[in-house]
Length: 494
Ligand code: ADP
Image (cartoon, rainbow, N blue to C red; front, side, top):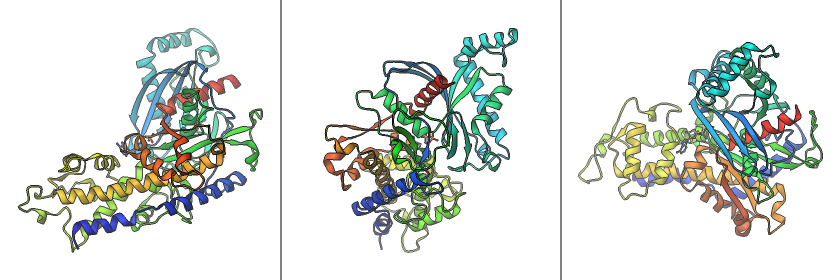
């Protein structure tokens, strides 16, 4: 068997056909409905108590922070009231050791320190003024209420929301594991650390990043009737949409405005089909799940999002390298052909280390249209320490990476199609259906949205006409602006 044939056999296992997409959509709709009826289901369908989406006229200066998985972002957002905004932001990677810290305090103290650094750097005047006031005034926490920044806290992990700025952590995902934090109110954890540093900041709203994306896309796209779905394809994946209150059959505990007849629901679709009724399963999906911190959970996310695609690829590639019948990334690949040379993989290569291959390499592979695959071979050299890879090897790598990326995009289409069908908006042929998306994967993986659109056109009940009306747009700075918008709504309720 040639390398190309062996690679093709791997590629075939990642094929996700139109029929598979349709079966996926039906099951997704069933699990959405189940999640709206009761707790403890695969799709959590968490009510957010946000009962309307913005229309672009909102105004004011707010802060927003976002703990997404890989990075912590801090920003201030000036909403201009005309669908535009000005944003100042900073991003720091979350140190790996804090993701698995002993105590929640260690992680949240780090977050509060980043907020302090941001205020000092970007709002120095404001900050100094407040520090002085704090020393001269005897207001309860030292600050005049009107000078306290209202902050939206985007916390992209499953929480049981108890109110607009209160919610307890249900479980960690995306490689975080700090058992001490489970069951605790994450807003209180952050506020406590902010107060220790005497910062003029109040955590006004707890925001899921998908809800933020939905809000931001509605603020920025007021010519339509608001976005129908906000979705993330970054470290993890998730979506939020506006559901009819009458469809939410499970008990709503908090207080909320019933006048709109709607409520934003956070699907937590990363755990779609944990029971594997319809999700595709390759040997590498099984291996990845077994070595993950949460076997059996987040099964959809493990096939779709940035945190996992690099590892699926690594496992598939390693298997192929072990195949004695073919030569793949091995020294004996050296030959007379110009494009062939001695492959030299460093012992420290991420290819030998679980979770060490970043999904960025899939984007590099998908985007390389050069005849000699020079970009990918450079990427293999730079990021995977696979030096001087042979062309044929790079080609096999590209085929496998492409298959994994395409399956992810088609699976993404399953969730998007189901939510769009659920909103009922397809019934009106004149209506455009806006989907706001955010996250490095959908932003940087070449043709990710095109592949989603292609799969949407194959869905029964959508078809190519319906797919044309589904407008998938990047919600720029989605989580920041969205969190600011929810902080604004929350400030109005204080
Ligand atoms: P988060 O979801 O943590 O807020 P991002 O949206 O930036 O942050 O997503 C980070 C994830 O996206 C990581 O898993 C990373 O491997 C992946 N990623 C970053 N850049 C790319 C890229 N160019 N192509 C594919 N995946 C990427």
